[in-house]
Each structure stands twice: as structure tokens, then as C-alpha cells.
Image (cartoon, rainbow, N blue to C red; front, side, top):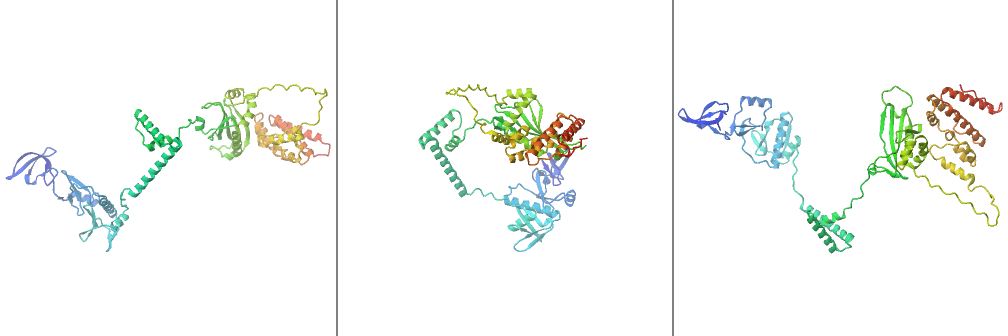
Length: 551
């Protein structure tokens, strides 16, 4: 392959003369045949040291698309555009050392900044050099130069870093390798730790007998070689022997974060779902303690919030717009409301307390399940949820007659007496859903202070909202609404006298019976009329204010 100085390239296909001088016949890539004087023929890979710009290249420089440092290849020869806007030949160069590469990077960044119109400057120990044109800088043979009145002045030292800081180029860090002193100290510490591990291993496993420990090490490596495994170093053997053995596999219950309490498995949840303007929070589940490592019949606790009234909003209402209830869900999907008409915080608190005391929860639900949900009761019983019934105790033998043939006599009251009953009543008052009955009045009056504290409206019939929620199952919504209003008008506690407390308890008991017996609003009005008649006929004329019938 040959070309001429004008750049016409092709393959020599013949030789001859041109004007009496030797010449070559060259066939171009397009098939044209040209005659090139032999003295102008240039073999492939060779070329002049410099080339002039073509008119097209000059226009590219003016438009900024061709810049100093760009390269091109002509017939196997690479040329670079220099600062004088001439193509100069680029011979194969050895890779730049890191410092020269850093200077070239600074030069290229400074050229771009100056072409973009940014003014730069370099300060030396002699003067300050303001830079505002790209041709003020040059890069040759790995060195960066300033062009001052046509003379090249090399940039080195801090002045180069000064220019690099203005164009955002950082000097590369030198890899000086690790410090021999630090490496030696690190090696010494590693050997000391390995020696300490070996001494501790020998003392703990072999009672200080190093020969026995070395024999065990050799035997271990012999077995590894027989099993086609690579032998261990002494320190690797010690660390492998000291590694704790894997414990029993973690059960699915433990992976889920379940805990065992009072003979039950308690798995807490916390998922919250919003649907149809309602919210539902899954609080957790109670499983029998003998449940296998999989889900089995359980009692689930859930808190649900329902709108207190229809507000016509398309977006879900706020938590404050909802009335919350605590629900138990059984294996068949049947639900039982435990508490209703509560604020969100109170409902969640009650559900979490029940979940933390699974024995109390299951004990209260078992009779309800046996009566109203027999299929769920049977499924839970088969899974071991309920404790087996206590074996029947044989009847106590008849006491032998006195040796002297006399007779037995009652010498006093039962041990504990009314005080024991009062203590049991106080303990029962701490349980969820505590209610006083009329039979508790006599026991309470044994201690007026306890009677004054426990005998309240809420302990007799429940809070108005809770009482209204209980009525929903057997009556209309209007009855629940009116019952809430009626109970809210009742004083929370009576006057501090035994007579007032007894009258308060009797009146509230009768009011509760009337409200529970009403199926609709008309029935409720009729019950209120009967109560007014009873009230007006109970007292003598003038001894109490007249009660107007409820209309």
C-alpha cells in the first residue's frame, strides 16, 4: 500500500516511467488507476512530520468542533493538532508516568475552561501569569508549558497544583505501600493472639497436656487427608475446635417471634387494613401449647373501627371518627364481640391485655364456646386448647362418731366469714368486665369505704357506651342510642349512706332490666312509663318528687 503527498492511496499494480522518471501504477480502493512519481510515493505507515490544515478542518476549528490535542490517522500515520494549528506526527509513545498524566489532565481541563470563556491564573515565585486564551498553554512530551512572548516556560511545583485547583483536578495520591514497621507489628500481634488461643485450647480441652493436643491435631489432619481434604494449620485447627457447635434448629414459631405463656403459644401481629370506611387491626393469636410447628386452630384477637355515623365521605374517616370494638375470631370464622364503643387507644389496650393473659382469655371463652359455638369448641379442644377436666374426687368418708358416743355441735361461724367474701369481691373487681350484683350489697357494707368506692353506675350496669353496645345484638340502633342518653343522665355514684347505696343499686338494676327488654323505640318508651309508675307508687305522697312518664 502506497500513497502520495496529496493523500491519494492505493495498491501498486505496476511500474513504469513518467516524464523519463521512475513511477508506480497505483490502483485505488474505488478501482481507479493512478500514476505516482516514485520520489513522491509514501509506503503505508510512513508520512511527513507535519501536514497543513484543509479548508474544512479550518472551518471546524473556527466552530470549536476541532480543538488543540485532537488526532487523526492518515494512511496508517497518526497526527495531533498542535497549538499552531498544524498537524504534527505522533509516534508511538510510552505510557505517561502518573505525574505526566496529571499534568496532561490539568492541561485538558484548563483548555476547556479557557475555551468556555473562564479566566485562569498561575502564580510563580517571580510573577502572576493571567490566562484568558487557550494558546497560552501547551503540553509537550509530558510537560505543561506557559507560552510567554512565543517562549515556552515549564509549569511545575505548586504553580501546577494552583492551576489544577482552579479547574477542579485533584493530584493523584501516591501508593507508597504499607509501612514495614506497621506490618511487622501487625504480624507480631497476630502471632501472639494465635499463641494465646493455643494455650487456652490446651488448658481447656487437654488439661495443659500439649503432647495430647498435638496428637489430636495430627490425627485430625490424617483423617482430613484420607477424606481428600486439605490439612489445617495449627491455628485453624484450634479455631475450628473452639467454634460453638450448632444448636437445635429454630422452630417456625420462634422464627415468627411467638412466645409461650401459661401453657399457650402467643403470636402477636399488628397488621392494619382499611376497607369500606372501616379499619381492622389484627392484634394477635393464641394457640395451644402442643400445637405442631404449623398453623393450627387458634383464637384470634382483632380490633375493628366502624364509622359512628354516615358522613358520605369517599376517603376513609380518621381514627377519631370511628367507634372501636374488640373481637374474638374462632377457627370457623365466627366472631364474638368482647367490648364495644371504645376509643381506639382503649380498644387496643384491652386487646393487648387479653393477649398477654391467654389463660384468662381462654378460661372466659370456653363456656361461651361450648354453649354458642360447639363446632369451634370441639376443634379447639381437639387441638389441646382447653385443659382436661379435673378427675372427679371421691366423696369424703363419713366421719367416725366421737369415741365417747356424744354428738357434733356447731361452735361458731365459718372461718373467714364476711371478711373473706369481701376480699374475694375486691379481687374480682380488678378483672375485665366486672359487674356488681344485688347479692353483693350485704358483703360491701361490711366496709363502707370499699362500698363507697366499688358501688358505682359503671360497676352495676357498665359504662353507657358499653351498655349500648351490648344492646345491639337484640335491639335496634335507636334503642342503643336512647339507652346511652338515659344512662348518661344517671349519677355515677350515690350518696354515702347504706340506704342511698341500696336504693341506687335497686333502681339501676331495674332500669337495666327495662332497657334490656326493649326491642325497639316504642317498647323502650313503654318500659319507661312503667318505671315512672313504679317510682311514683313506691313512695308516699309528698315524700319524693313526682316522675313524669317518659314520652
